[in-house]
Image (cartoon, rainbow, N blue to C red; front, side, top):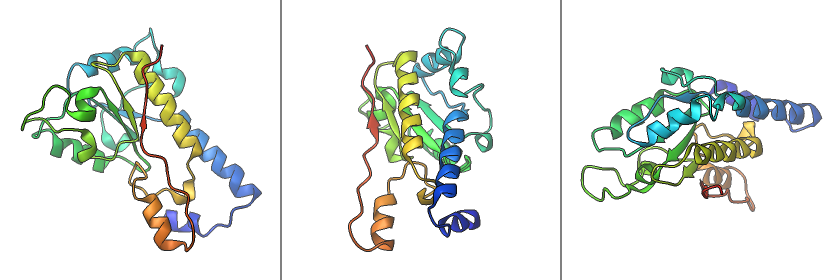
Length: 195
């Protein structure tokens, strides 16, 4: 937290603005996803990383086996009640800033599994940045969700990142710290299926 306090004390000028653009570009261009496939959506996630779709062109060379090396979690598939604490533990161990993509209808809303054993939306466990629809979503839909996340990262500001991954409480924190009107942040993005 001490490093973030130092960034907040900087005044916004030409030099810090360009530095901020460089940091946002480097974050966007070098996201490392965590290996977290839970069901059939994981097959499509693996296909997106294979040669036909090649996530390496977006800086995602390899899915990292350790959460301490990852800053993007792609939750691919249904989350059971038993898996929810493990998912949260992996999310908590990821480095800051971190982002989450909810891949598939089962991860986003519980899907057809409307019962006590399945979590009805991964956003009950971790904050979600982008939702990718489908059952299962195609690799093109996942890549569209990743590009949408890249746009969100490029629009963000490094000095105002709350460190929670999704920015859910950022507007409330700003309203408490700064008097006056604060522009509300957009809700998490729900990606439409590309045609």
